[in-house]
Length: 118
Length: 153
Length: 340
Image (cartoon, rainbow over all chains, first blue to last red; front, side, top):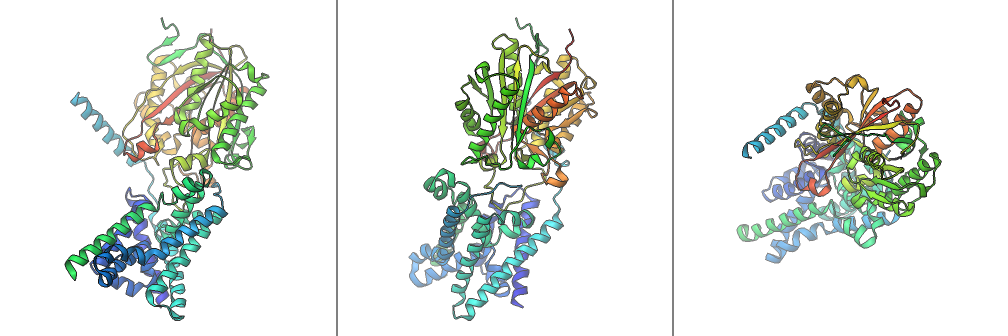
């Protein structure tokens, strides 16, 4: 059942992204920035938590989930280490993913070369 | 002078409106269908990975981080193999919006600019596309942290 | 006095130079297109044994120029000027090709209009009495253009339906003071036209007014009518741009529909090759002219052609700064029959 809910929520978030890309002048880069910022904002006002509770990975895997992790981390940081936590919380909560992206990105660039499109 | 400028702007607006009706409309239904299927599919795979690690004793947050790392690996690897751009051609936002798309936006410039060297090429261009996501994501999280510190405590 | 100038924008060449040979090279995708049997060299690997897309493009241009010189039964030392350009920053492909070729070189930037721009200037150099043999050449490469103007190859983005596909290809033509044709008889130089299109994914619509403007100027200056031509070929307007150009020219009183086509539509079969609005790039009109059009003229199936290569003069900087796209189109009349 949680698979189906993840599928549904993740799919809907992507459809919103698709509609933004097809229907407006927004490029993929704009949509990604918008989604991350939106994820932070919605988490801060408490709207995103219920979506995560319902959709699980469907809400955390798409990019608003990255914003969710950032905002959650920032709030948790403030709770545990005060003002310092406002700066360290968000980044440390997402540091695993960012570090992984850098390391894997570098490794793939060493291993592979881009291929022309057909 | 002023008149000429207004005339030019009017002509441009007229032409833009004329061009607009010539532009073929994207196939919304097909595009949204594939975005839904692929985006939902990646999320469901993420749910599976999440469940496995949660059952082996990780807490929810750690399991989510591990899920992100594994999905990033797959996104990066499929990009390296030259498969991810082909998925993206049909899936659109379905493969751009999930975290695997974030990985794709980091790996593709890193690969593309390898020929410009490992410092200025791979290192310098890696965040050409994903950089803005981190800039706005990190900044807004700090703002949320500060607001929480001053107003909610 | 400008004795050869007729009308506002057109030159009538007194002793029309002859295009004594051409050569064309295309990439694998273009080699599968409808014009494949007209091209001289079809690459199986578009990296062409080089280390980067830019160097591959430069090699393609260099080898195409060499092949054209060879076909004209000339040696490199016989060629007095090389007029060439491409899409890359600081004309990397053309400059690097010229470095190896050892021919006096004028680098041209006219974006995708470079083929007819170099033919125009080459013809004027020869008719002016400044040279006997001139090479006019240009190239573009899908992968080098993509990384400079758009996105990395492996990025999983979707191309809009208005987007065009940059042709991997090169074309070179050798012009000579004496020869048996086809001849360049008229040159109409375009003005930069900008009707405010900002979408870099809709270049055809941006360039169409420039193409139409040059076409109308050509008809007015020369007194030619569309019926005088067997083919009027624009460079890379694609499906949308072609339709718009035809309508603008029709509004000015010329019906070109019977003889009008676009190199970007000729080179690919969109239904099979998924190229959206059509081909684009310097190499598009270059390979179609040096391959298809030239050979059809040699066979006598086409006798009088107006080639109008079209260029979008945007840069990645101007696009990011939100500027609209200035465009240009140059026309050359190429004919088998000279009237005296």
